[in-house]
Image 1 (cartoon, rainbow, N blue to C red):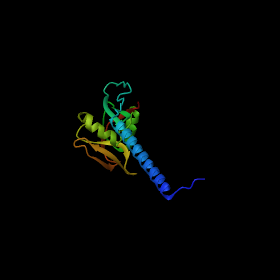
Image 2 (image 1 turned 90 degrees about the vertical axis):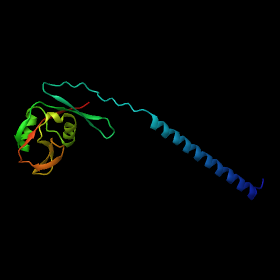
Image 3 (image 1 turned 135 degrees about the vertical axis):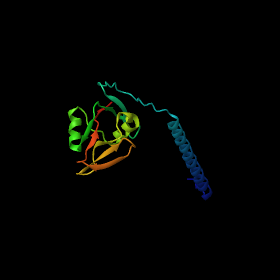
Image 4 (image 1 turned 180 degrees about the horizontal axis):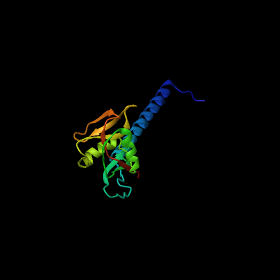
Length: 163
């Protein structure tokens, strides 16, 4: 049996530490290459993955997006306008003509893309703020606010098309 000296142990330990350092550096280099590849890789989004048939008087407003930028649903503005109504009546009217009142995000999209289809008035959103109030969009300046559900506002209905 051979006797190992302290010097041989220290050399072996230093060699192992050097190999471990080299392996860690190599892994870091591989990780850096992977991240560089991911950052240059192109993402392909299919923007219009659905054919949307528009009825007379309808207008395409645009798409509501998911957090990752993919399409959640498309918004179609229906023909017609309710000129003065409380919130509950506006909700019922929108359902009666085959749609729903837009939510606040959808109203922002309508303001951005189809402002000319609206008068310079406040329009109901389907989103309640509380038991007695709901959100609305002002189409003269784009502000959104909450008002009493008994207020007399205008309404436009939309329908959603999911890809």
